[in-house]
Image 1 (tube, rainbow, N blue to C red):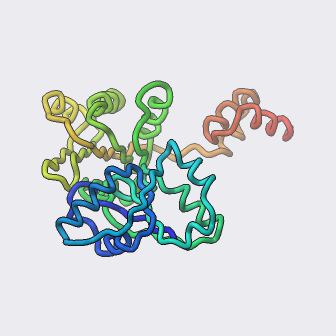
Image 2: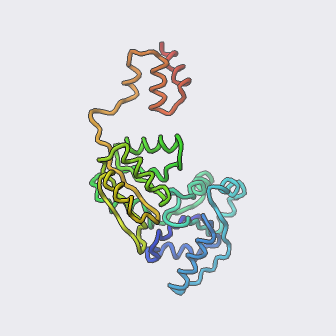
Length: 271
């Protein structure tokens, strides 16, 4: 059986009894980083006077997961297998989803223990009254992919939540400010840790504050939704326009993510 175990995002006291039990009973532990997991078990062992008997630790991360999955067999899951990422909930901007999918495809038992998660913690801490949000993870470091994702974030009609490293935080705040300086944003630093800190203000005020702020540590950014006027444009609205098929195909491709060629051919077939 596979059990996904969340680990503290900072404060060791956030480990749950169920998580500790799963780690105590584990016969094989897949880890995002074996060194981080072994250090966690050492700290728990010292603090709680526990004896973690598992000696079988294997790395499982984005660079080797395909090879690991290729070599797995159904019989491997006769053991108590645990997966932990470095901090927080597996599969949330962390590896683990492919292990879950392997279990689903092979009708194997698996479970996910609830626990620490920076996204939900920041969402609850932000004070926004919105009940919906979209989690975008980390932005790309640079280039077209970064610009397109940030545009999507800033045009979202639900709260947007991002993770950001201290090395790129100021750049991200500047880009948000340049798009909409009056947008309200919330930032949380080092959640659950000793130097936890939070800010909420307009994008321009946050950016100016952070020009002199200590921005070390990991950050979560929660961004107010865009204030849209009127109704959202639907597929049928574009399809009914009296414009050239090629232009119509480009617009529909932008909305759906399909290729222009595919949609253009569909339009021609309807003529």
